[in-house]
Length: 88
Image (cartoon, rainbow, N blue to C red; front, top):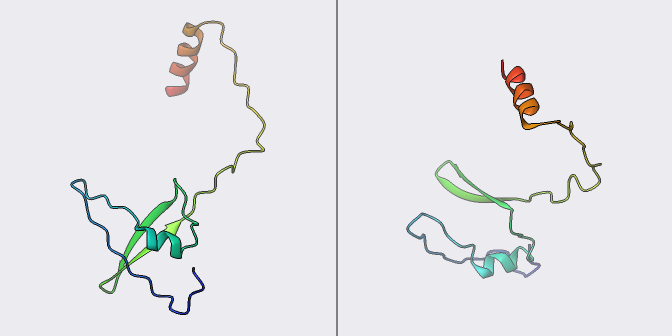
């Protein structure tokens, strides 16, 4: 959060036809530009009060994971057969 003497930041945004809205620039700046595309906004109503929480996605969580070489199928028929067996 910004280190200004007044921590309260107010801004307004409009709800569009599909009920979406944009996080206003003053709010983004007050959060020190920590919001990133892919983050989630959680809306919470508690005791009649609305609050918004930002959930930061952890990009690169599998960055160090080794590639996985799956089974090599001789034909599409072999893969379909294996899938059919698994689905029983």
